[in-house]
Image 1 (cartoon, protein in one colour):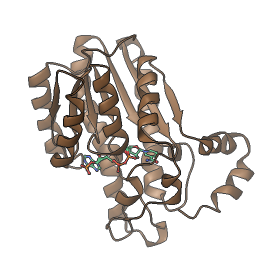
Image 2 (cartoon, rainbow, N blue to C red; image 1 turned 120 degrees about the vertical axis):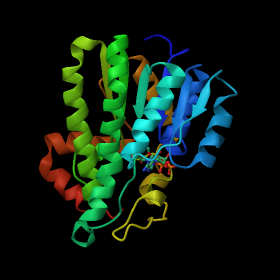
Image 3 (cartoon, rainbow, N blue to C red; image 1 turned 60 degrees about the vertical axis):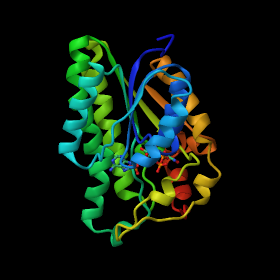
Length: 264
Ligand SMILES: NC(=O)c1ccc[n+]([C@@H]2O[C@H](COP(=O)([O-])OP(=O)(O)OC[C@H]3O[C@@H](n4cnc5c(N)ncnc54)[C@H](OP(=O)(O)O)[C@@H]3O)[C@@H](O)[C@H]2O)c1
């Protein structure tokens, strides 16, 4: 795919961080955009930045933990646009709590947004892609979808689930001209740690050192756009933390030593 001009692209989690930066980067490509998240006010800020570059940018508020809302959103967006060329499943919440202190309700809340929300939206959009004979589904996972990480048991599990689901989906869709890209960022400097949920369900409200020193969301978004154009199957995006993926695979004892030292 050489150009994204006039491609109909739906981005979740477009109110903040990577999703917001992606929306602006895709607007610069003159893609036609649908922006989703819960916070409509923040979505309007993203929209304001996008309409400087693209002719179409609609807001579709959406809470991914509400399955009725997902169905309604898909109906509204497809009524407006007819179909979706690229669905970018980016919205997600992180976690900062030890498993021993975290009630299973919190684990379910994380899975609901990060996994089931993404799966339901994908399954609702897929028939439109199948009937038009083309499409591209992007799932924003994490390097913690490749290995476990302390204080993020449910988060890491949700990202491992994303890896399994979308890798399998890619295999199923090979003959349907529908591409699947799994993006696994490392540390990106967004509000993810501020918004991460703790054992009692409240927000962590701290900018962790890892995020503070991470790659900018704009640089991350630029790489994702390049990956979408090249129809990459897998993308690892970040700085030296990406090495952990390879250390986990090839030097498991060293991975264990390093990961047990993680403090946030
Ligand atoms: N930043 C990193 O270091 C990093 C690393 C690896 C992976 N990631 C992944 O990158 C993605 C984007 O995260 P980010 O870093 O940009 O964090 P962020 O700034 O906190 O953005 C998260 C986005 O998800 C949306 N969201 C959260 N809960 C939602 C829900 N129930 N329904 C709909 N939307 C919801 C938020 O919007 P509202 O609050 O308005 O709903 C927001 O737009 C996530 O999937 C995250 O797991 C981030």
